[in-house]
Each structure stands twice: as C-alpha cells, then as structure tokens.
Image (tube, rainbow over the protein chains, first blue to last red):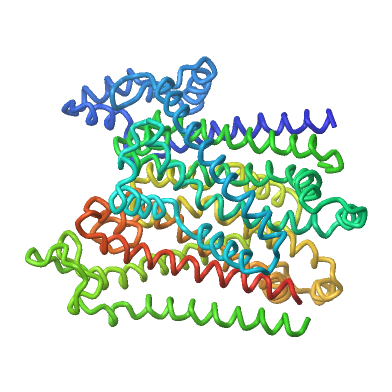
Length: 308
Length: 271
C-alpha cells in the first residue's frame, strides 16, 4: 500500500512537470510576439528599437529551455510572472480568483448533492414507478443541457420574468445562487443517474435480503446500510465531475460576472495576457491531477478491498 | 428477454429516425430557410414571431428561424467532422499500438494518459483562446484531448484479438501489418469504437457551442446556436425569442443524440 502510494506520488510529480512544460510550450507556440503584444496592449507605439529593447528586457531572446527553467523556478517561489495588461503580478490575481471560484464550485457541488441524493435513492427504491420515470427523464435532460444555456434560461425566467434575483453576481450570497444553480443542474443530472445505479446494485446484494428477513425496517436498511455502502462511490462520482466543473465555471463566471478565476482567464484571453492564461492552465491542471490522486487514495481508504 | 430486446430495438429506431431528421434539416437548411439568414433589415429589428418570421427577428432584423436552420448546419457539421477526425486518428493510433506494441505503444499511450490528465474544457478554452478564436481553432482545441478515448478503446480491442488464429493465419499468408490491420482487425473492432463515437456527439456539441458562446468558436456573422444565444442574451428582456429558439434547438439536438447513444449502448449490452 505504501509502496503503491509512493509510486503514484512519483507519477504525480512527473505529470505536474510535463503539465508545466506543455503550458510553457503553449505560450511559446502562441501566434504573435509577446513583447509586441505587451507594448500594443499598453498603447505604446511599436517601433523596431522599442520592440527590441522590450524583447531584451523580457528575456525573450534567450534559449527556450533557459526561459522555461526560469519560469518554473519563479513559480516555485511564488513568482508567477507579471501581467501584460497592467504590469501587476499574476499570482495575487489568480489566488483571489481561485478563492471565489472555490466558493462557487463548492456551493454548486453541495447543491447538486442535495438535489441528487434523495432523488437517486427514491428512484432506485421505487424502480419503474412514475416517480422513477420522471426523475430519469429530468436527469437525462439536465445532463444534456450545456451550462451556458441553463444560465441564460435561469437568468431569463428567474431574474427577468419573476424578478427574484439580481442579474449580476457581485460576490454577495444572493448573487451566488444563480451561478451555483447553473453549475449544479447538469451535475445533479449525472449524480442522480449514478446514485440510482449504485443504490440499485446495493439493493440486489444478499445482505439486504438478509436484513429484510430479520425484520429490519426498510428505512433503516436504506439509511444505515445501503447508503453507507454506496457513499464511498460518491467521492469517485464527484472527482469525475471536477474537470467539467472547472470548464463550466469559466462559462458561468463570465456570464454572471462572478469574480472568479474563470472570468479572469476570459478577460485575459480577450486582452491576450499570456502569463495569466498560463497561470490559469497550470493551477487548474494541478488541482485536477491532485484531486484525482486524492480520490483514488480515498477510494482505497474507504473500501480496503479495492486494489490499485 | 426477447421482448426486452424488441423494445430496446424500437428505442434505437425511434432515436435514429429523429437523428436522421435533424441531420437532413441541417443538410437542406439552405432550401428550408424561408429568408436570407444574413440579410439585415433595420425596419424589422426585434420583431415578435409572426407569419412572415415564424421565430421573430433579432437585433439586426435577421430572421431567427433561418439562422437557427443555418446554424444547425454549422453546429451539426462541425460536430460530425470533429468526431470523425478524432475517430480516424484514434482508431489508427489505437490499432498501431495494440498490434505492434513495444516502444511506440508505450510512448503513444503515455501521451494519451497525459491528455486525459487534464480537464478537457480547460485545455480547450486555453488553446482556443491562444489560437485566437475561429471554428477551426475551437475544433483543434477540443480534438487535442478527444482522440484519446478512441485510441484507448481501439487499442484494448486490438489487444484482445491480435492473437486469434485468423490473425496468425493472415500473417502466415505473408500479409503485411497494415494489410492485416485494415482487412482483419478494423472490421472486428469497428463496432465498439463507432458506438463510442456516437456517445461523444452530444458532449462535442456542448463543447463547440460552449466555445462559440464564449466567443472562442465561430466568428460573427456566421450563424451558430451558441454564438446566437450569446449575442441575443444582451437584449433578452426585449426579444426573448432570439434566445429561446436557438436554445430549444440546442437542447433538442443534444437530447436526441445522447438518447441515441444510450439506446444503442443498451441494445448492445442486452445481446
């Protein structure tokens, strides 16, 4: 077990190094010259001399690997480079964006679980009933809805037709509701389906029959045994959604102007501010890889029968 | 069991009929569109749905119905193209890896693992953003991670049949590796990989219209559902139809293709 974990950690480190390399390569291959971009985005008239001086100053004339090494070294020390747009360091912007994105992501996850756990269990218990069919149709449609569509529809019906929420999410609790709900709906669709399958599988197990014959109440079996056994899988189900959640949060934050890292990256893309985009890719990739790693370990801890 | 099978078969056929209708609409959208989807008309801006403009008009007086129809072509065609290219690249790489094994297999599969280690939409947004938008850029951005699922599937199926007697027989006949792959391996692994392609259509459509919505996909004025919704949401209070019709089209299309994928998968499982 310890050996396995050590091996996984070694793999993790290699993946992270490759991730940083690919991120740097992406920026290196990006069309256009960063010095020119930087100057023109700051409104400086680009002449040959100015351009060359700027290239020199930004260290663009040195070999690729040297630049990569320096960039990576800087990252390790918390220096994530300087934004092309306003010459401010990138790291604090990313951190503050990440904080808001985490708030949004967690609220939407919790919301999705609140919706999907009861629905998933109920439709598994009452398999093929009217309720089950309705839940299945709803979760199917929820799963098929793109995030941007849900948010536009929610905005229209809840903000404009019913006038319940503010249109712009200014970081307040009320502003959090709609973006979190937009992210939660497709996730809830997927969770419900998976929880339903999982609970149905558990209900078919012999221990359930055993408990029933011993006269344990159905409600107790469900809560104490079935759900308890199924809950290990919920971590895996959530971990599988992290990637979608990250992509979705970019869209949702842009629409609702939620000041998270997704909105930051869209603003940076529009301004061609590469250091911020690189920081975004690196942070999101790292979080994704680490969460997957933790969920694998957790899965093992929660269910020691699982082998690697 | 037989009854269940027949029921599943019926589901597949119904879903397939709807999918074919959608594809036909996309193919013949040029003929079906009642008005020019790009013709602007300043005297007819944001008109509510009427007999002349069934879905109303948008901010520039363009016919929303015609744009939804032409947009079907953009969305469906680019989705199919992207899935087809990923399918071809993936199945080729997968067969090569499974058939030859060795160092090529190791390298290509490590690359595939790496691609799977990144969140797809995050990569797509970053790549499309750096490529500077455009439908081509968006498709490249999504394709970077998409081929991996096909490659892995094709590889595992190739591995499972590569030591079958008929493959050995073909080898003994003196057939070359590529020949064996084309005539013996491909027909036998095609079905699971094709089904995977079918299930990817819905996700890909969400990806393409999502990128277009963010302004990283199709360039205005080309009609595409994601970008139409993005444009029209600014004046949704005044002309909700300009958002709701492309939205409905998106949902219906994704639901139909997802349903078809699910139905085919369940049908296969029941066998």
